[in-house]
Length: 272
Image 1 (cartoon, rainbow, N blue to C red):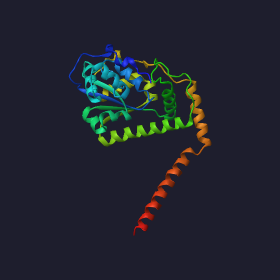
Image 2: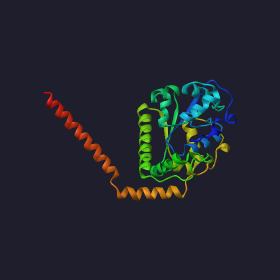
Image 3: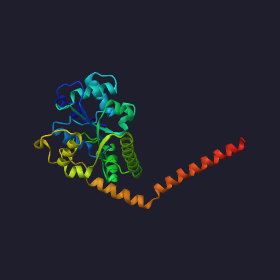
Image 4: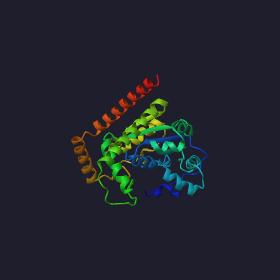
């Protein structure tokens, strides 16, 4: 996968600070529109530059630039140069990236009092299709060099992406609710339709003052979906309706549970 090299450019650094006063975490999943939202927030000059700093691939590149040795040390140094003048640091975190912090509890300790914006897509199937395509082409953000221009449709791969996305969304919701974190949930379609209102809502949520003139009126990143996305979505729905994929897996799981219970009872009986 090719990295988004613009992330590491010194042109996006802010004046050095010791630590941020406020932290915005965009709680996200792959292909949910977090890159679009991060750029819109960055345009105001009041939310740092929310990017995927905790992505393992990005961490390695940051370590090379900053001369750091560990993920947490690297993230601390990134905060010093990517916190905007009003003291706000922004970061996008996909749920699997929490492992970089050693778990959700450690994430909260690393970013005490953080504000979370959970960004999701109602049409999670389209998100899964987009995830399947991006994972093959290597193009997660417009402008990245493609690994291949001919991604291949796979029902099983889209199915896996769909399940993973639903699980990660549910994991974010559970973690945020159970921990009592300050969080705001937004939908991708609503964000794309009215990016200015979204930025203003986040500013109100965090009590961050922004200049209305600096709020973008339209998205600053390019739309990536095309006819392939639509074709794959229709094909997946058709093939799913013709199959009993979910039922088959549920029956298999249920059958395994029943078998394990019977085997356990047999062992208890045999040892009595």
